[in-house]
Length: 93
Image (cartoon, rainbow, N blue to C red):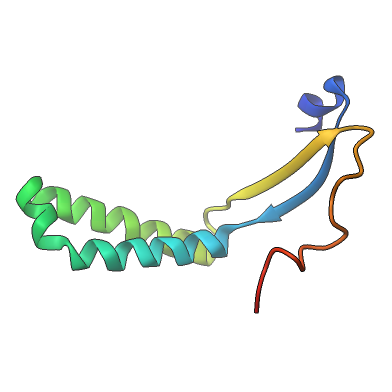
């Protein structure tokens, strides 16, 4: 990635792996999907319901086990120092 950033004088300020956050999001999406299952099936069909359930559950498992990764990269112009020293202000307990 640095081959992309360096020619433009961009510095990587932070890299965070969001895979566990995304696994949690997918679990929530699956729960909401299951709550609306009958409505979804009426709009589409049983095959769609099974495929979408498999996608959500499989993706949840892959992010949970580390088979899939999701990185957020913060970059800025090389002279920029406008970044917090920690992520403490972002996340609550």
